[in-house]
Length: 345
Image (cartoon, rainbow, N blue to C red; front, side):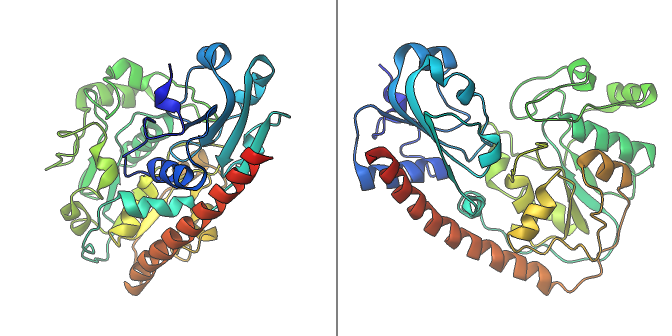
């Protein structure tokens, strides 16, 4: 009844060149098609109602697109299931006797297989920056207000996009819903907008990047590219507003695009700059003040900077990205071995 979640070639991730698809292939090659074992990720898992009513056995959840959530641990007493979570967020996954948590550290390196290679951006020294924002989340509209209030939406930046009232890559949004305070899982951020800025948004959004065709072929196709490399050539550095998760460790393509394009960057995400540094990346903290401990403070303290650095630091970051990919592949083999052990014991 549920072939999309079987540990077999009928699974919805089979045949996809994604970390989830590759992980599924490695699992099936290692342990075969085991009856009563299900496989999904956090974005494509069965609804709780269906898990309770129709599923039994073991559910493997590979947390890569989104962080782990403690949602399942609260309902396992009502399910004929045990769960194996493969996640970087052990502390956030919840605790239950029917749940096993297998931690990972390096799987972020698999972004290297998803984002198409790019030539290096032309290195320049100045204070014009590229900021690509597609989805209308609270921290991004707050950052847009910070730029607006400081007069940085004119000549001092070259492009700002995509704050888009028609299609943000996931769903159509009205300007009213964009400006309304929003609450997200694991988000401690609520936007606080000035009435004059809201009026400016009504009159001026969407802002769009020139020559942007990343939405034309398939939803969120911009995930797989750095964007238009000309955007990087015409700017001096990137500003990254990573998806806001207050407690978890989470890096998306947003953090890796400037690295692959060899563009200097400032990463304003809540925990992401520190996580990148732990993974061996140069986050340019000799140029950027990262003392603010959370995203709201980083937004409020953001100032234009000039990156006068040795471009070889950018090339070294790309080398580190390649090394992280190799660590991710080796770690994946170890994760599958641990999963096999968990399934047989």
